[in-house]
Length: 391
Image (cartoon, rainbow, N blue to C red):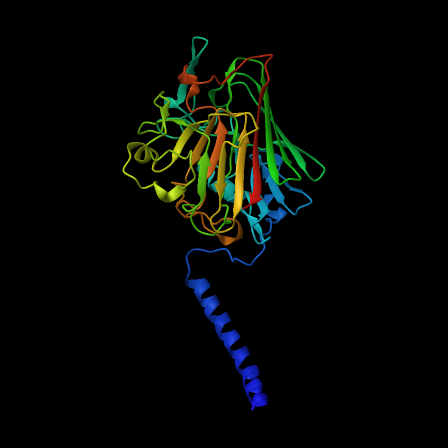
């Protein structure tokens, strides 16, 4: 009897497996959203998709790694962070950055700025102009009625020069010429990414100029700590060391005021999920279509994390350290599922968040804000660290 049962099972199981496989294939074909397999180790995109000629310059693909298996990949087009693999609570490699499999994806979605190095001025400048030293500078209006992230052709849309040093460090350099996108001065920029042995991605920015100018560099990576393709980020838990923020008007320009977060949906001084108050009836949430606001950091000296985010499924914890006075928190409000990302995932609504360390938006028109002016003989220097662990 035992033999007969065993024999019947041996015949029955392959049929079941084949049937399940067929059902699974059918489900995949009918599904509109690709979800990450919870048991599959994430991999980096292939290099081939990042090798082409842009503006007469050859683009390349670079990989950093450490002893723990953490890996990060980049392209010199836009000095983009393409992919970042870290281990979750089960030791599974997880891609926590929303990115594409090739440069074509970045070219067709320029306004999303996925993983890009942003400049010459990160965030918005009201009505596309500012006055410095008694002269008005007019910029390209690419986010009506304002200038956003550098203008029509920002640093995200140029080919940088790159130099990789060993497995852990890469430096990108770019000369933004006098008058580029309306900004004065030849701005010599350097951005260094270092993947440390304690699973931190350290970004160091430097710039010098030969004329008075403004500069506000940042990185615009979208994170999903549960992994790309895993669903929304609304259950991620966030805490920030920010007692105040800068409210915005209906065009997403800062009003010039600095207001307390206490008693508002912007109070992340204690841990809260991104989605817990995002749909509250609040004028500021309406103006930003969710969170798209600059938080005024209480402390920003690299000794204390200014923000901590935990993936609810993965247990991956992200701590952010910076020397910058502000943190732009963006909850992926304009992600619409129009793009196919790495691994076949789509960029559905709020499936990624950005935390951009920077000076305050529209500072060139707001003298009460920390200055973003850079003069000849000075060196712009700032450091941001994204450090990963598991809880």
